[in-house]
Image 1 (cartoon, one colour):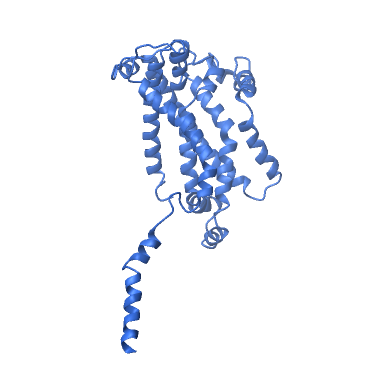
Image 2: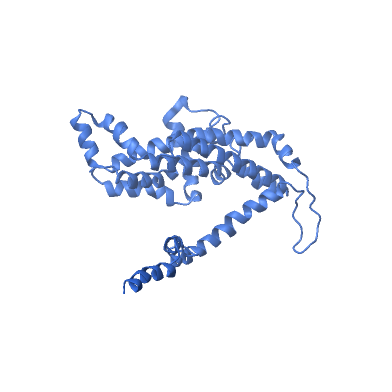
Length: 319
C-alpha cells in the first residue's frame, strides 16, 4: 500500500512535463486578446495603407526617377536618376523661398495657436456666462469651409477694408495680402483664427482631468490665479500641449488652401508660396511630378525632424 501511494505522485509528475503549465500560460492567441476589435479596425487600416502609406512610398520612388505623366496603359521608360531631382529642388530659389515662407508661418501660427487656445480654453472652463454659446462660436470658423470665409478676409484686409480704415496712416502700403512683408503673417493669423476652435476643444478635454484639489492646494499656499495657471494648469495639460504642437506643425507645414485663395497662388512674387503649393504648381500645372515628389520627400523629412525636436523639448516622452 505504501508502494502504490508513492507511485501515484510519480505518475502525476510524469503526465505534466516540467514548465509545461508555464508555457501554456505564456502562449497568446495569434490575433491578440480581442480578435473582434482587430476585425473592426481592419477597414481603417486598409484606408490608411491605400490613402497615405502607398502614395508616400510611391512619391519616394518617383523622387529618384525621371517620372512624367503618360497615357493610361502606355509603356514608357522612367529611368533612375538618383539625387538629380533633389539637386534641382535645392537649387531652385522659388522652392527654397517657399520653405522659408512656411517657416515664417510656423513661427507665428504655432505659438499663437498654443497660447490662445490654452488661455481661451481655461477661461471657457470656468463658470462664465454664455459659456456654451462662446464654445460654439469659437468652433464655427473651424467647421466653415475656407472658401466661405476667405472673401470676408479679403474684404477686411483690402486697401479700402475695415482693418486699413481703423489703422489709418499706420496701415501698410501696399495692403496686407499684396504686400511681400505682410502677406504670410496675415495668412498665419487667418489660419490661427480658423483652427482655434479645434484646439480649444482639445484643451477643454484635458482640463477636465486636472484635479480641483491641486487648485485648492495652490490657493491654500497663497497662489493667485496667474500663479495657479502656470503652476497647476500648464503642467496638468502638458500631454495636450504636445498634441497641439504636433498637429499645428503638421497642418501648418501642409499649407495650401489659404495662400492659394487669399493671394492668388503664392503672391506677391512668391512671398506667400508654400512647399505644398509648389508641389501642385510643379507637378500638376508644369507636368513635373518627379520634382514635386522630391519637394514632398524633403517636406516630410523636415516635418518629422521638427516634430521630434518639439516632442523632446515639450516633454512628450514624460507625457
